[in-house]
Image (cartoon, rainbow, N blue to C red; front, side):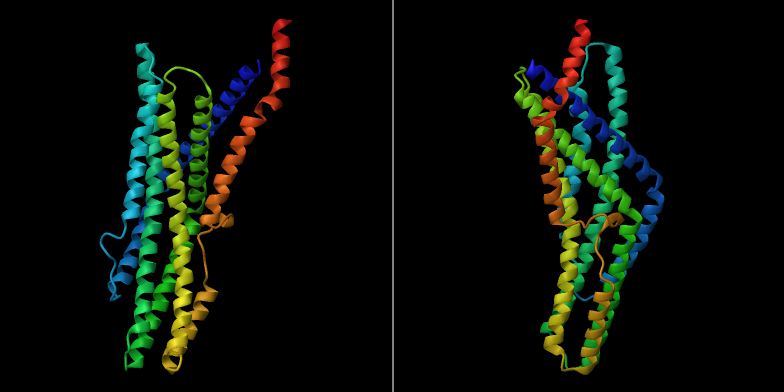
Length: 331
């Protein structure tokens, strides 16, 4: 009797999680489609600005430095293609009309899922591009430490130029956080629900004794692992951007200690430090949280805690309701 209650409760909980995931995917897809033109025009304008910054810097970006971005796109493509196929094959019926219905349903789900993933790729690719430009600027700042230039005016002009470019980067981060903050929050929530759904299904199916259940567990584990990688990498891009901002501050302070005896250079470095302190910013969508590694740890801890609660206490909290239903049936 207790195992029956446990299965009913966990299946109902799984349905709630699955419904939440579908609602979030639909919302993100609709918002992403509605704001696509505005977002793309803003990104093209900012990408043009980033290209101008990199063109005026002596140290250029390596052509194969975006391997992590390509890895995310590969995982996203596999998820977008594999999830509808796995879901469709798991719900195949013998009735031909039901098969046609499932085909139409899975096509619509695949389109919505693909739109959501394309929106995610846009945001993460853009953040990765900003990160690469910031790394190039820090490399150019480091060159000023080792290069001995007798003409102080050239060094001062280069520092002034890098300070202006750094201010532009900070404005870009603010623009992205303000314009797409709600989408970032929705994407994080959707990834959290998808991960929780995969973990929940894997635990329930693993605990059951149905034949050929391994064929259902393995795709679920792979899908949950892919979503976990996406969540980690999506947050890692923003975390690395924050680290590069701190690195900029450290390089400028080190330059002050090395070349502080040159008056023009010291004045530019003082202005640079003040600008960094007054314009400090982070990726904080809707001012709710800062996208960093500690946030990932908190998210996974929350998911594990929720999974433990629904698996451990679900039977106890729903047993009275189940007993009442059985009593009503007998009467």
